[in-house]
Length: 236
Image 1 (cartoon, rainbow, N blue to C red):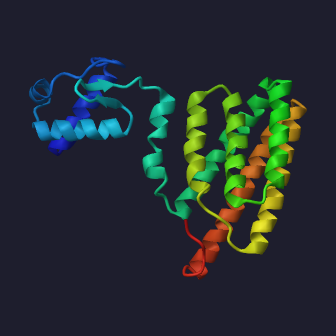
Image 2: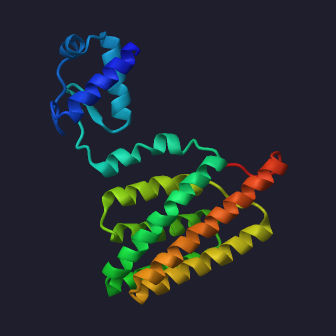
Image 3: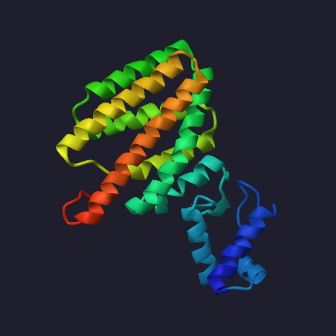
């Protein structure tokens, strides 16, 4: 095990074992070096890495502290690597999204009030009427994240946001494909909205799962086209 690995393992153990709790200030570099048996450079690098992941917070002039360790915040750290994934790896993320978005839609159907449902229904039509690709993508993301928020689980919302972030960067560039995809996407949104308005968790869940499955189909189609003509297919 390298010195950096030793420092990382040691800091993680201190937090996992409860020796350092959320909000606690880390011991001085010298104390950590003695405790972990590594150099100051290894300690500093380990602290930087854990800070990048949201586990630690470095405050200028004050030192490093254990973060709140909220699951939603730590999950957001996954975006550092998820946003680098190629298309074939993204397909695995879409498969994960399917049950998660279905679950969120089912809970939303049981919890949403009339005002929220009216807002979601209006948003669906705004998406359908939108002709600007970037704005349509933003509104689409807003629609799905509103539903996720209704599930009342911040970690679920954060995970879906991370999983969706990479797939949003892919576009269907063929005009015919893009038009067909938009029609299917709009129909999927309306099906989800109908399930929500009917307060039917099973219908909302099935519509959400089908909507994500449609995304998966188009991504697989694009992957196949890239494999045949990588110099022509669009890339983010």
